Length: 531
Image (tube, rainbow, N blue to C red; front, side, top):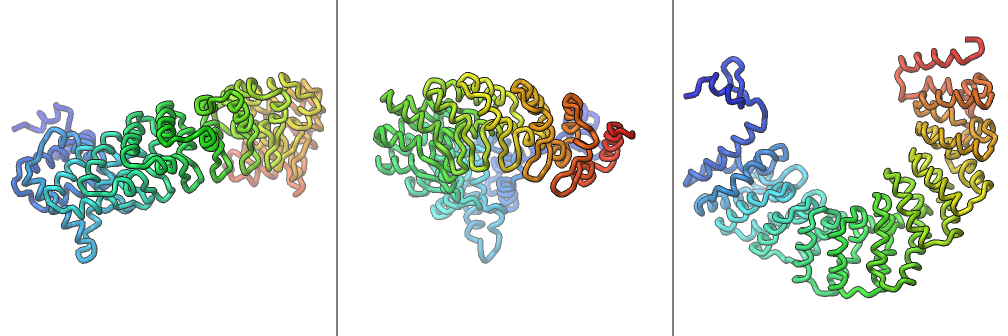
């Protein structure tokens, strides 16, 4: 027998008061899984407590690591038919005892997920095979059927969860389960929708795993008619998105290629292809809009692959460029909101080939429902690189100085100019660029930037302090000096329409601690004439 000292030397356990403790929880989880599979392998008639404990482990979310080890052990340890029969009968007993005994919670979690949901979600193919073989041995087809079709709170079966998590092998195992349980493969698998009206095909469209979408195509082709396949390709979820919108968001080439194969098998003609690309979701956005928001403007290449006629390609691309969503935003507005700064360059490279300079000029100056151009949104989101790209392209398409001043630098949306928007969000780099361009355009730096007020009568200084961006406010100090303004009158003590100064807004700001406020006030007082 090993002494405590010997065991400790292996680095697995340590001792406190002669009591062993694993140095990491994972070791304990491994041995729990090992214990369970050993007991099941050796027992001829496993005790009910052992089976209930196993099912408890298979259900509870916090035991995911144990399930991972179990899945590995079950791959190499084949259980006897007698053990599987006992396991299957116990699962059936617990499932049927949902009303009288109140024990169904042993197979059903808080969110409505079953032991099968957990295994499908985590990709534990061998656990699914163990459950299926147990129920087959227990000879209860109804429980097999019910367990497979049980939906969680999101209206998803284990089949949906396997698809959304990209588990090919698990999906194949579930397909076999469905056939064994005599589940309707078409209505209960391929066309079954969750609460968001998404099928497994919709969920798999945004998954990187190339094999899964291909496998789904094979099953779809075998089970659905041509019209049913076409309906699936055009079906919308609760947000009005088709499978094409979801695929565009990630833009995996293998998904698009598979969708093209589906479309050919569904016999979609050129007009139907065009309708697919122009289809709008509930926000009025096409698949290209979805792709652009997630830094995939190259989704435009779908047009060239789906529409063969060059003139029709050009017309469709122009329509997509000029199209507006329900907020009156074009693809440029969406690019401005993207967290990826190079999205503008990608779009403009395409637009340069497909649009005339006049069309591009109008697009760059287009305002949305709130009066914002892509320029305003870039400033608000702090994407200085996007602003720089827009500025260079404005020159290229000959937007004149008056238009730049009136539509970009001086134009106010419902929340102010680009200068206000950047100050409110604390985007100092954007403010510096705007300042440099204002000088280049020979604007009145005092009246057009530093002292310009939004609809609430607030300057950029007010807005920066209101949001706790005191560092941004202090950056403005140097520009105040350059414009020869009075610090006290024009900045620190300037009043908005409610009679509030930046100093008063600082004291009310919920984003700054009292100590920080005292420190900032002391620093700012040095800028006052009598300090």
